[in-house]
Amino acid sequence: MIGEALFEGERREVFTRIGSGPDTLGPQSIVLDLGRPDWSTVHITSDGWAIRNGAIQSKTAPRFKRTPSMAPLPVPIKGTAGIDLLRPFVNVATDDDFRLMVGWLMGCLRPSGPYPLLILTGEQGSAKSTTSKVLRALVDPSTLATRSFPSDERDLVIAAQGAHVLAFDNLSKVKPAMADALCRLATGGGFATRKLHSDADEVLFDATRPVILNGIPDLAERADQ
Image (tube, rainbow, N blue to C red):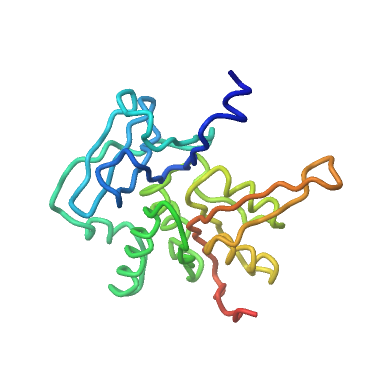
């Protein structure tokens, strides 16, 4: 049975938190894994959304993987209050900044990139970390809501394999090599790293992820090279 699955079975993409597939409400459906024990999902289209119980979904429904750090989303309920309810919980200077933030959130719900990098800058005590945590919790909550920025590309890839949204806290600078790695992660350039305990084998990672960076200095001042 294992051999048949490896060499004869149909290959199917496995998603992290956000996915898509043939068994949805329509060809343009987006599927959100709520991360709950019953594997329930939310199917989203331009016409609205509906909740499906994981136990009764068909064999062609999108499949998701989970990691120990993933946290569940609440079961959504229909309402009319609108996105303005979010405004008091994030510290942005203008309404235009808030619209950009909401646009970034909407982009996070797409199952594939490219995704714009969200960079939050401000003086000490301006709620950069809190805003990062709030935004991530709306799409891809985690027991590790924010983390330190990795020192090398390999650690960035490992972080990206376990989450849909990455939030890096309290950056003072981004080295050129890591800035390039962030651009590839946002646009889908792909990564290749050497397999541990091997001189010739590579581990390939081809995916895109939404990323939040926050810090006191302007982290986007370096032009593309």
